[in-house]
Amino acid sequence: GGYTKRNVARCWAYETSLLADTPVPDALPRTAYHDYYEPDFSINVEKHKHMEDMNVKHGHELELLKIRIMEHLRQLSHTPSVQMHYAPPDAKTARYQLDESESLEEKLGHYAREHLIVRDGMEESNPFF
Image 1: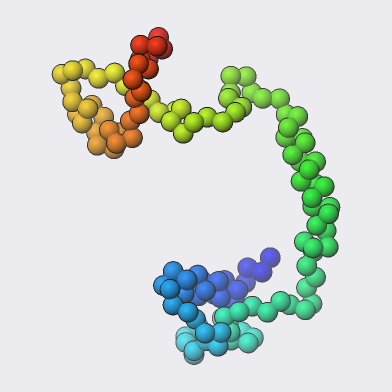
Image 2: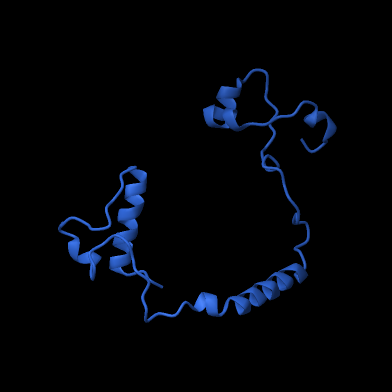
């Protein structure tokens, strides 16, 4: 909740001030968008007194729900032949055998050349490459 024009305008003004490394005073100057900052015309949002923070009230229930969900996920059977553990970042990187007549640049292009990982002896030790 809380995604109103007033709050979104405040959020964008605040985020922009951070990116521009320019502090924004709480009392905003008059602009064409001044009405978006009603009712107090400031950058900060005051906590509404009429709204109860349900996250605090139901925090224990949310934690129990999270535990139940994690337990259900743990008990799911895996899909056959799908890896269920950490894969190194280069695990899906293709290994290429290059013809001596072609340059790496011609065969793969600049982008692929910069991202290609070939380990010494990899092709000889694995019959599938």
